[in-house]
Amino acid sequence: MISPRNMLLATLLAMPVTSYAADIQSTLDHAADAVESDVIRWRRDFHQHPELGNREHRTAGIVANHLKSLGIEVTTGIAHTGVVGILKGAKPGPVVALRADMDALPVKEMTGLPFASTAVAEYGGKQVPVMHACGHDAHTAMLMGAASVLAAQRSELSGTVMFIFQPAEESPPPGEEGGAELMLEQGLFDTVKPDAVFGLHVGAGTSGTVTYRSGPAHAASDTFHITLKGRQSHGSMPWFGVDPVTLSGQVVLGLQTIASRRVNLMESPAVISVGTIRGGVRHNIIPSEVTLEGTIRSFYDHQRAAIHADVKQVVEHHAEAVGATADIDIQKGYPALINDRALIARMLPTIKQVVGETGANEGPMVFGSDDFSYFANETPGLFLWLGTTPPGEDPMKSEHNHSPYFDIDEPALSNGVKLLSHLAFVFLAERN
Image (cartoon, rainbow, N blue to C red; front, side, top):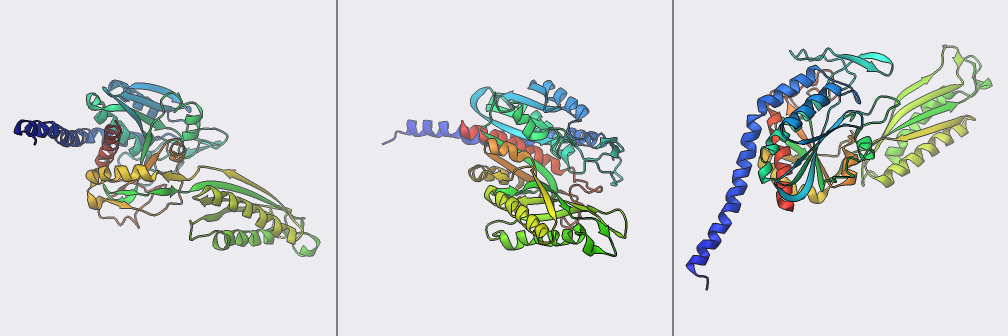
């Protein structure tokens, strides 16, 4: 029989755990609310001064100075302009990483915002307008806010938080390396390897809500370049030549049958799209060559390899059938982004705690790609979407990422800061 004294002692020992958890949750939320104005100010500043991939020097400097002001150990210059902060908690425990991307796009802004970008930079040998048309300004600002929140709780942290501010997510400039892949090649996880990595992306959706996906979430993105070689002739006498123009039409249709007839769409979707067709210089000359460029999107490695083989077979056989030849070059891009199923199951209660039961919803697979996938291939990863569609707009009809009119509802950023802070803190606490 348990004595009344022991029962009381057991009750008292149990109370601090429940009270502590509630207190910390409230503390994190209040801290996120306190930095909301800073986050919005940072976001607007980055938005007004966007920088292309591998050129995020100003952005990286602001990030590094902020992290240093919080007493966080900072390393700069990773993958050209990447910044990494290491926050060591007062208690021993695992390591968790939080990632934000910093680069903008060669897009001319048309939003009319008071802090709209008028920046111009060199890209591909040309001067181009630059805009944060994908929300990376918001990602950087939210992670800076989360750094403020978590640094203030250093004494309660059970482990280490790695803050990854990544350059060139939108791919580095032509002829350069960059992004998550280069950060890893340069040893990002060699000294301190996280036990999990979290990422957050703004986009279409009811403001402040979260979309998640267990398992395959974002597609692998590959690029193909095809050169069809025929024989030039006069347009009035095509029988004296081999016409690569008509062949290109057959190839385009043939490529579409790969996704519609060869891929098991019951297992996973796939897309093959031709984006450019170039050939010829004059209306009455059948050219000797036509080039096609396009993209392949898939979710599984075996499916990816099969599609690559099918593309080569279809193109080569179509060319052979008309007496032409074909050169096919397929370049692998970002791998598919696979959210760790066990990790999302463990963290879903935390996500719902931040945004509410109805504020978190599982979404479909997305054919867009993100190089967060490289991090998630190294350690269990979880990538989430934060809805930021301005109030009064239909998320399905509003301007989406990469549009020159893309904008966000800034109050949603507070939920982003809370999500990153809670996910890191809870992961460390539960794993300790």
